[in-house]
Length: 120
Image 1 (tube, rainbow, N blue to C red):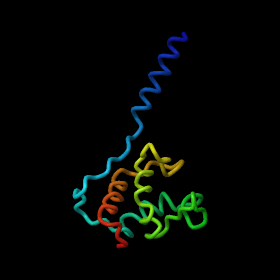
Image 2 (image 1 turned 120 degrees about the horizontal axis):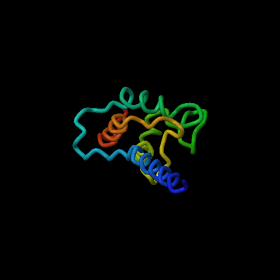
Image 3 (image 1 turned 90 degrees about the vertical axis):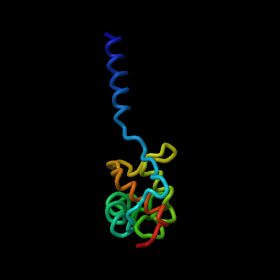
């Protein structure tokens, strides 16, 4: 009986470990062909919906002193933001307690960084 419990516990842990999304790899330099617009492509879908919500990186509740409601604060922390939303193991995955951000949105953010972090 104990052997069966151990077997199923080990098998369950192994299978669930395989289901975890891996971190999003950075896009190779030069592979971003479409212009990413900060206001339209990133501010609302990424930051307003996932980061600057109540209790996180809004003006009212600045987690770790970082407010992500405007271009300056976001561009100044862009590399760190990319690591946290792409599940880099050296950073706490964001958003805490929320759904993982879509890979396509993470890739847009990476392209925006590569395109010079423009306020467009």
